[in-house]
Length: 360
Image (cartoon, rainbow, N blue to C red; front, side):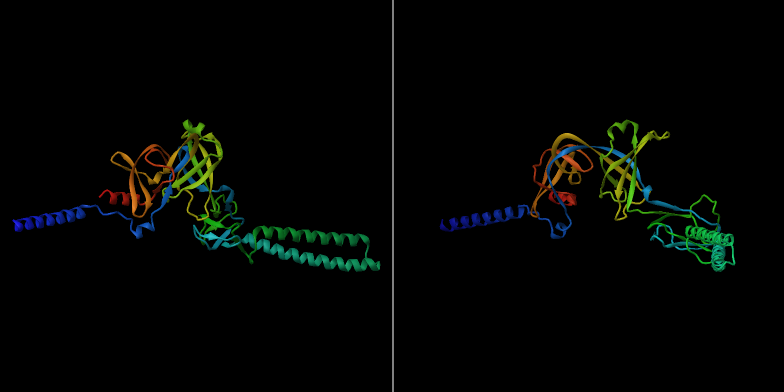
């Protein structure tokens, strides 16, 4: 009987150990965000914010027309060379092109003639002045020679003014220089091209792209919802995750007769030169309401199984999936009616990777 009791006790002990090991194996492993991923993810804190409705407009990036210069030919002639290409940045005063022109040669010749005439007139006047003091020359001759000096000086001044307008150049060469610093956004000239001063086509267009305009179309039904100084958020296809904030600084109070839309203008800083003219732009006009709700970043929301979810972050080993009810959306925030508390942190990028890992 003692042997049987010992055997039963041993079997029970082994069974208990086996059950404990099975429970240990079946226990889920604790999820921790890897250090490599921690360096990349971003967080934001949930907080109460005013509810902002948005009016979505379509527009495009345009030059700041106050900082665009078109350069036209001032003389006729043959283009010797062209320095910059389309898209190049040029500094004020930089040489853009050189034109061999008979008009320029004529102005240079006029300058030489005017300088010679002025020197001769001064010498004649000096000689007549000496004779006038000695009583040899009459007062009439003295006054006439003085007038000739003034006439020659006036002509020299006129020729120098014309030359300063044409710009400095040697002999028959007319030099086209950049009047401002900026980018060559239009180029209509090539070497060996024959040009005429009465041609209405500009040689270059230079624009300072440090600031740009966004021109957005407002449909007739939305005009009442757009006001001067309304805050806007601009996104582009090239930078879908980057927002450019500004405000409506001009409303063009006329409708396009073809598409029945009114244009509004937003001026944006473009110091990084990310925005290029002719880019399409999505413009979200923000319309403030009297309501206040708990808001989470719109890019933190995950839609799965017909529900909205967020990934709540406490620390790298304490991450939770939370179901939330969303009352309203705009391009920046999701307004939460339940599921989150003020002060909680949510992951705003790469949250889908963590969401899938926690659901495995």
